[in-house]
Image (cartoon, rainbow, N blue to C red):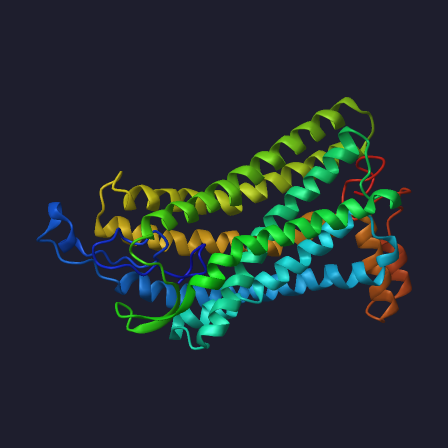
Length: 370
């Protein structure tokens, strides 16, 4: 299974609405008075697709996300004495992305063989996934806001006497994400999924609260997990671009390209899943007519688009670290120290760095880190 809610399905009684978080194309039309004589939809297509697609794609995301973010952490910790405010956010972002991709092998195994790891790991893996899913997004907002302050208002949160604000912000992000994961910690458990003839790590909601929890989970994802972060990032970067356009200097053009790349990548990775999930919500609330073909398309769409969203954690190291001169220079120095490259190679590709530049494009000179 592949869905925002940890590749799980809500379990309800037959009289409830179809689970909003379900990744099955099954729908019992016998419970619908308008379709009382129609047979249930087949699950073969979606089940076969997920058994092949999810393990392959999750393995790819796992390898790329793990290696890229480990490099970021290794370089930053090696030169931790030079870390600034934005660097600290990027370090936490890399940690969150690593913890997120470490859960993907479990979901890949579930797609093939069902959940075989027991109730305790079901709760732990599900909660860890949710914590790091949200923290990755909120840390991107923190990075955007830090750049907004340093460029638009010339307020550097990374100055020594204000560095505690960065640590407080990171602590607040992790704490808030932990609160968002409490429902997963409480409700996730290993349950039998008869329609797939397997066991899965599922959210076990009672029928009396099913409709309420559906609304809560969808609200959290669409609004808290996408719309609000997108609006915050959009505002910060629009103001940054306005400031850079009014300034003078060669570096601003590259800074604007980086900003556009950051926002566009976030939209391309997460907007498709939100569109598919919104369609699923409209179908479940009977705003759109349910058909077997539509169910299958939605389920396959959720698997593909959610995987695209997880792929975003592989792109974060390149968007927030590797494009910065300071990070690239320190990375080359580290490779030289461990004997991976020669000194001549390092001197050839080592770039001159302006004073006070950071890992990415933010800094006291606004965009000198590129």
